[in-house]
Length: 148
Image 1: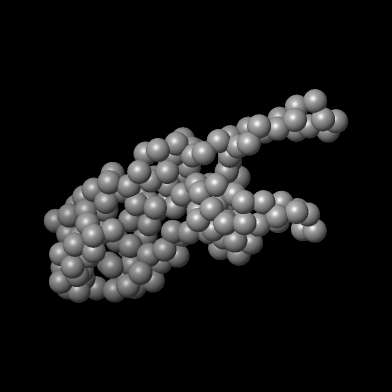
Image 2 (image 1 turned 45 degrees about the vertical axis):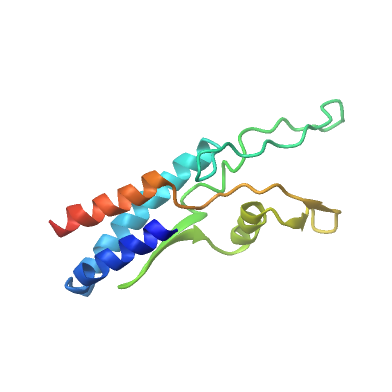
């Protein structure tokens, strides 16, 4: 996180010289690129540090009504759930509403109910959102390209 703070202190005086509309345009570009990078990483089932997500627990395949599961988080990474919010001074990429609660359970490895009135279970930590080294470089490159 220190690199991101260093980037912020470096870019702050340069961004202050831009008009609010230009800052908003730059923030939207950065946020959209970040969203695409997060979607790609979630599809690859990787944490921001490059380590793979902890796999699902093995299921009883003999049970009646068993549903074969595909990749984790296939719906949550869609643009309807992974949203971008931009103002003159900020850009946010994240989950909102009920999806945000589900994502935070996986992000931090919390306990939650499997069904509404069912038993609670401990979910393993799978970091859905975060900055990788490539993301930091991408943000820096986008800032430099926009300012030149």
